[in-house]
Length: 192
Image (cartoon, rainbow, N blue to C red; front, side):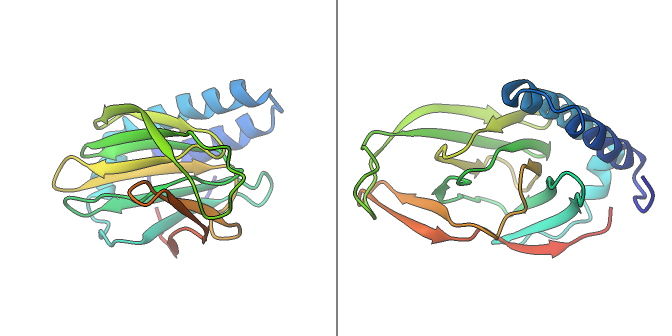
């Protein structure tokens, strides 16, 4: 694919487009995306390129939005001591790979029935290290949070849909509440 200067990223987009064109069952499809992203976040030239990207809270870089298949590839550059709100990505799938630095991933499960607007109770069901090269699949409606575990971290996301066009939930376990009017981060284009 033309327009990308980092060869590994150009190959990644070509491979993703081919993969999305296969029409695989959902679980198999997203496992394939995880495998492709694992190869990208292992690429040293891509990692070195990302070291020039500026960290800013509340922002996601737009690396690619595919006109044919609708998938979105973004980059999150985290400041030191970053603590993301507990949130979900609504109906969408996200594959999240740590390109540089280290994070800690927290995954939650709702313990309420979800029927009372503005209320939610959560239980932490998994907490694991996410060092450079680690890739997770985050399914629809899964509450989660990423915490920085290094001075700086960079993650690449592959999402089933471009963020910002749908409401997502943010969860506040200390009060047992949720806000479902969050639209995600500010999207900023970035040439790769």
